Length: 333
Figure 1 (tube, rainbow, N blue to C red):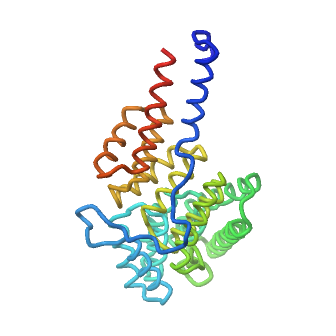
Figure 2 (cartoon, one colour):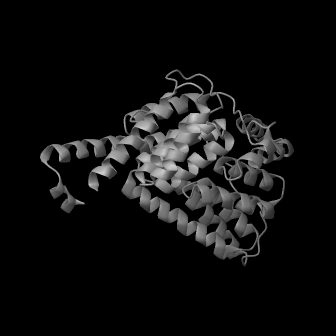
């Protein structure tokens, strides 16, 4: 690209650099209500799940789990997973619920789904490992122990917060104890209390804390503190449940942190819950632009043209960025 600059005079180069800077910034400011009011109900769900509000079902499942009503918890988390199959929090709690109901074999796939979506969810790795010990699958349990130790090592380099470090260390100790106990008994051990999973909540907050966490995360995004914002968004989701606004900003924060693959996955999840979500539609278009795919970005703009009966800022922002990208491309020719 540097060689092509010779084709322009100084004013042309300056204009193109300014346009590139605009593209790098994107819309610049994350939009959210600055007051910590309730997140809006999930609307416009797919036709197969029109009666389900996944956030509400999640909260009901969590309340039932805390009360020891595991049958109801299993039912409600199942409702969540009907419309948000890969949600890590719902999968984690479904795994715990299966264990609590004596369905350890069934719990494995839910813990694995939670880990596939969030590899750093140490509570899921811990419980999965201990269940695997009880199912006489120690080698698979050791794989989880190795992953936990790698997470701890990465934290040493990435300055993870104290609570997360403590959870990681507790998980490592619990898995090591379970493996040691199994070895002492000839690796033929059921899920006796000594090696039972630690049925730990992902957050001690109640659902009312979800909107406050969400709004705090948006403020952190506007300060470009994306790692801290992601942590708050995870906490919001752990207490409130799957919500397109939370998923949208998880996508936004990951994109701004440079993780486009994870960002696209979160935008897709937001749009699966609310296909007309304007923020996720715009930000997915911005992601396509950052990847150089103007054609796909224009498809998102066309969706916004349909969604926005009257002009909306999401549509105007994306249209402006597409025009800027096209002008940069044309200037290079």
